[in-house]
Image (cartoon, rainbow, N blue to C red):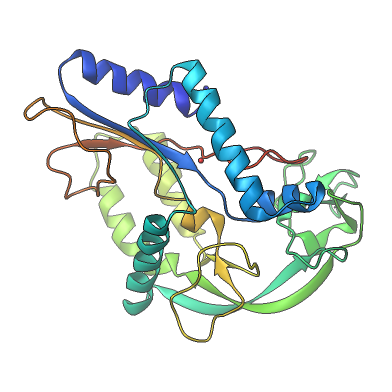
Amino acid sequence: MAGFGVPSDAFARYHRLRGNDVLMVSGTDEHGTPVMVAADRESKSYVEIADYYNASFREDFRRLGLSYDCFSRTTTLNHERVTQDLFKTLYEHGAIIEQAQLVSFSATTGHTLPDRYIEGTCPICGYPEARGDQCDNCGNQLDPIDLIEPRSLIDGSTPEFRETNHLFLDLPRFADALRSWMGGHDEWRANVRNFSLRLLDEIRPRPITRDLDWGVRIPIPGTPRIRTSASTSGSTPSSATSRPASSGRPRPTTRTPGANGGRTIVRSTRTSRARTTSSSTP
């Protein structure tokens, strides 16, 4: 709450007090593994879990006094259309590529297991509770396949690793343009600029699809069994926007940076998913 709800609410209230038009928007991210895990555990459908937590979060935020103008969700038809349009545009411009990826699956349910849902012994320092993405003891980045005796945090079963084809956002394609843009910002602190530039030296294609049946469908022929990842389909809902007062309060609709009629957009960095044993997070 302190990381996403309160700062956005304070920003929105500040601009309202100044007499500016404000649009504060967020929503629940209802796709991906956390909802599926919760549904399996409670013997409910994915829709039932999504509906329950959307209503729960709405009530929590109302009681806390967060002043959202629009609190939506990623399971709306509008969100699906926006996500598919974004995906299709990137694909048509050559910014999405296909690559093989080693994916971990639950031996119990057959569902994919995100890295954070897998635990095992670190092959570098021997820490027995290293996660599938990194070891908190020695700080090294890991892949689930690197772990010694990996196990699912959900039910303790040994995950199965299979190679499947997925679609990746070709981030290295944008590295030169980003490097040029960052280099032109002399007003940035030197440590911030240098840190950002070093990230570009290590940039790699990022997977944006998952082996799931719960998510936004890929608008590309030949991809019936995969869906957009939660980080892709959940990347649009959370923001607070403002502009100088002119024509009354704005309508609660999504605005696009660069075409927002003068509004300044500040995005929240956290989204709310169903609470599960290993994560809680629109």
